[in-house]
Image 1 (cartoon, one colour):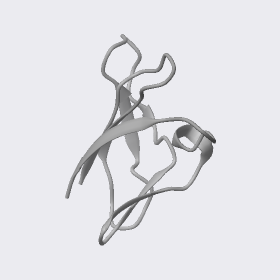
Image 2 (image 1 turned 90 degrees about the vertical axis):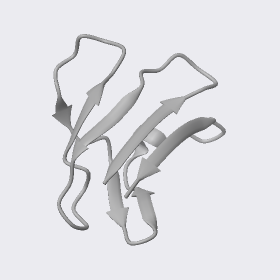
Image 3 (image 1 turned 45 degrees about the vertical axis):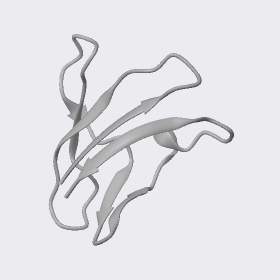
Image 4 (image 1 turned 60 degrees about the horizontal axis):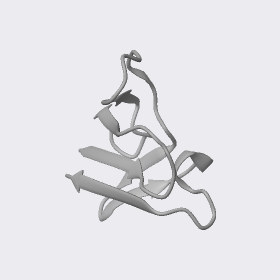
Length: 71
């Protein structure tokens, strides 16, 4: 399972997941447009029909995001 997310109404990084296990949070993410190292997940959790946002990283009130998800 793989997710790519970016906030579009403010400056933000392209964030890509790099691993998950079952319904556990998507364990590692990497910022594609920076030189940052791979880090712990951004609060996303996989579910049979897609993914849930389980923390505030991609849940800002009134914000607009684009994403692509592949199971």
